[in-house]
Image 1 (cartoon, rainbow, N blue to C red):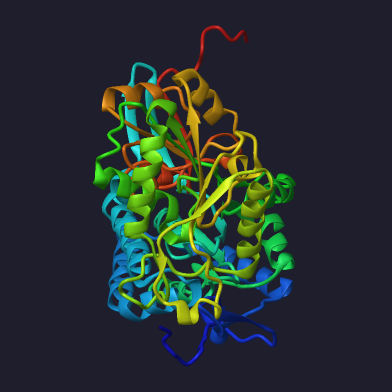
Image 2 (cartoon, helix red, strand yellow):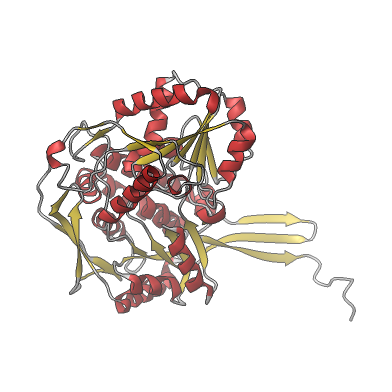
Amino acid sequence: MTVATEPIVVHSIIGGKQVLTEKRYTRENPANLKEVAGYAPVNTKEEAIEAIEAAYHAFGTWKWVPVEERIERMRRAIAKVKAAMPELTRLLSLEHGKPLYDAEGEFAVSLMWMEFACDNAKEVLQEEVKEHEKGKTIITHDPIGVVSAITPWNYPISLSTIKIAPALLAGNTMVLKPSPFAPLAVSKVVEIISSEFPPGVLNLVHGEADVGVELTSNPKVAKIAFTGGTKTAKSIMKAASETIKKMTLELGGNDAAIILKSFDVNDERAMRRLVISNFLTAGQICMIAKRVYVHRSIYEAFVTKYIDAANKWIRVGSPFNPNVTIGPVNNAGQVKYVQSLIDDAKSRGAEVIKLGKVIDPDINDQGNFMQPTLVLGCDYNDPIVVEEQFGPTVPILPFDDEEQVIALHNESIYGLTSSVWGKEEDAVRIARRIEAGTTMINTAAVQGLDVRFPFGGVKQSGVGREYGVEGMLTYTETHVINIPTMLELPYIPE
């Protein structure tokens, strides 16, 4: 099942104006590679500089706009995005490959966060006045300046709005660069939001490495907000070091699910949550459970029940088929990488079991489709276990005791999210010893996400936090104004 459509053309936005370019990306439909979903511009380094200049100029005025006006503008933008959601979700499914329900879910989370930011901005950003025995201290939360936002293809809407809302509400300006693998829907969203703000407050550029380098090294950029791979983040940190830029980095993860012996393998709803936490968005989520450790005493029974649950929930096909739960992988490069991990596991003697069913077999060869797989019999150090697959495959391995599984979890260079499954008392005890930014109990991935609380990783999974109050304050500088009563300190000699 495919849905024919006229290709969408999106543009860059610099200083409030659409910018046409000679060169452009072609974004194909990953469910049907012969179909063009749309076109996005390829900006030059010079245009990136122009966008930064526009943001820098706008910041001089925007930072003084009262927070009440910033909130009102953002609320109008939210209303416009909501009104356009039917077209936007369809476009996101078309260019990305995620089923419609998944695209709708991404917009729901994005809007939830933007509304939370609006509801809390005034209180979070208000200055504090503290009177004390030595006088008075005023603490303000000032905007930082121009923010460069670089976002990935897997959740382009939510991972852009997670940056846009707090940055603009705090009084910053922004230049945003999306991924060429999902540039269309996010460009439309940025266009909508930008229209509610003064020219230059929110700018949009597309492009290749030279544009990215400019956004991360230009001296007029004060902060970088990046979501993507750890390798790219290392290059960004080097580029930013010349001018000591502020940065928030949400990076890769190899998130583990730990199944304790107190977990009820007959709990069908819990097993379904676990399957979803492995394969939602075809496994292309930074916070998805990418390796599963099961206590040996329940391992055999768990695998049997897991396969049953997976076969019931997993239905591969067109993103526009309402019965489909998993669409194609976003791009051919990711298919190749995931398949290489599966092939390597096979070569090492692992058993690979296909899960679910393909319900649109007539289009299976037209796009980047991969039937999800379960991998058994791996060694703890096999690449499919220690590397981030970011695709529809998951290894399940047994463990013997709590000390072993905690060590297995914490040996990873990553620490984004994790999950522990079993009786709450047991699960929380283990969770306290896990090295991760977020640990969920009896749920995982997007199912356990709460935008009211901070999200981010430890170790090589990132720097800083997004979401929650902390995710709003990360776009501010704390400014302390001291007004002492005693102006001459007795211990300083004349």
